[in-house]
Image 1 (spheres, rainbow, N blue to C red):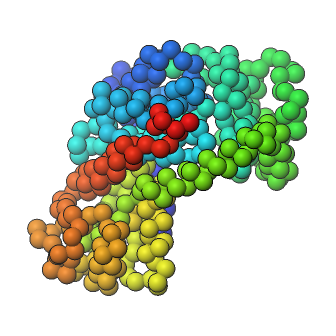
Image 2: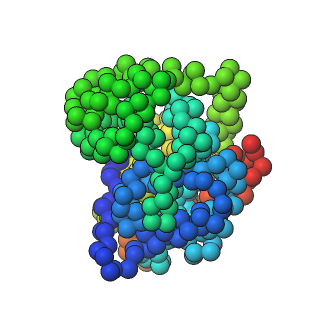
Image 3: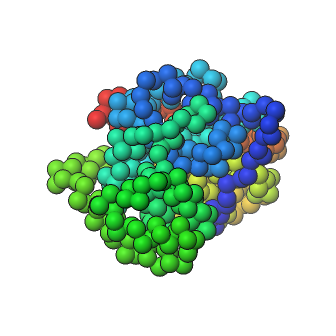
Length: 386
């Protein structure tokens, strides 16, 4: 089994006077949609070029009253602007992401919108409250951003969690620090961050990276202080419920590819990386535990291609077993007729003639899965589970 994680594609940026790309238009329309809700919200980071430049997913802090009904809110918006909801990802307590497809058939573009109330990370919940995140927010174009003090701490905490300090992150810390006039702005509970923030402001990546282990331990300690015993128990209970939902709802897809692997271009794979986050190619049997791994990957945003058919007969046994176990979602073939060995598997077969048709068939199946997951409910964003 070969895992190829790939990378997200670069998107062309529009110049002044040009029309917005479909994904940029979707983002600006969504900001307008948010502004009709009469609630305080902010885009937390990477917002300078929005909506024309969308460097990655877009992080929103929103109030609980909106978070609890996000499913309906997002679906209503998508229907109104002619977009399609292709993924819903419940990341954690009061954290959820949605991936929307926009643009005409054959020219799909994808945007991921991430939502949370308070800021937290895996292993360190309850770091910055929603009220603090939106207090003193500033208007920018048709959206809102946090005050620099909050964004600076937020940026540093994210880097501690991801353990990926870089010169670019240090530059951003320095830019935000320049906007803060109060020398005593850092709260007492976060004074332990001051040496790291000062090193970042100076562009000293080596020093901030070297401090990561100590700072991460301190960040987790701060998180524990912010949570009561009862809140920790509630978090543990919610994590168990989230795990059950993740096992119930597939965020991945298994495709039997009855065509050469090269029939899917690098561009199409990179585009699909925006929807699935990881991809796997299987060209031969790989032990008794393979199908357990595939079932798990389908619940962890995995896009799995089983290479089979006349182009790769070694994969036929894997394809047949995957179909028998109910793991296969579709067969993609590039010939006018499906190979004899793959007929009668009881799996939807789709003929693709281009990158665009491959993306469309994969997206259509994932959108249907997501619609079923949303209809089942039982999550924090369903309007029924709090």
